[in-house]
Image (cartoon, rainbow, N blue to C red; front, side):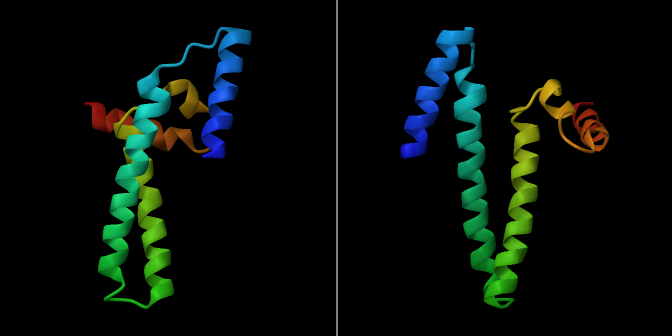
Length: 103
């Protein structure tokens, strides 16, 4: 809760000082949607894997899969634009994936 208050104050100050224009759907709604979907997937995957593998193995596999799922959700929900993607290491591979999906 403290982080939410801090982020709200930070955005308000940035908006006032540098006239920052943020889209609610891009910066608030879509990341929350991706996070909720990731949590649901994590719970489902972990509950299925716990019956197959040991607890630690299930946790590690779940974390790996959830990172992949969250990355895919970020791409499909178009949370990042091209300017954001240029800052990511190995961005050429990401651009190839995005071009393939949009065609």
